[in-house]
Image (cartoon, rainbow, N blue to C red; front, side):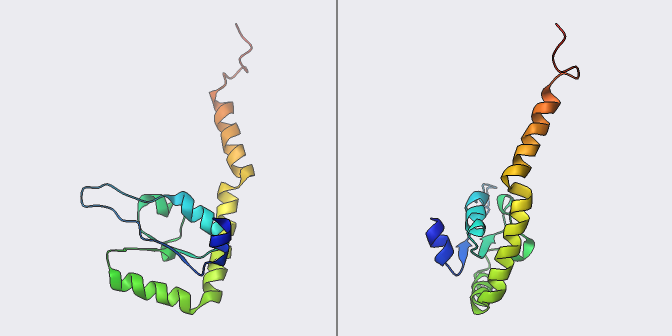
Length: 120
């Protein structure tokens, strides 16, 4: 997949929220694409809002707006690639190994008794 993401001009993930409230959308595929430097455009569902800035989310039920945004992003590949690099930097600062490990360490530390678990 990384080779495909690196060669792609744009990754479009038309995630939707159904009338019933069910949602599709997996933020991880967007993280993978951005991690490989690929610009992305995705449907505006909660899993996506954790990963993408608002400018890269769209109501995909508005097919004209979706098509126009795709054309706009493809028409200016330099701007799209620059946005992808900026997004990658934000993701690394939030989801990089060091940041995730530090959050896990904090959770584990908070689960320990205050005296370090040394009292009987």
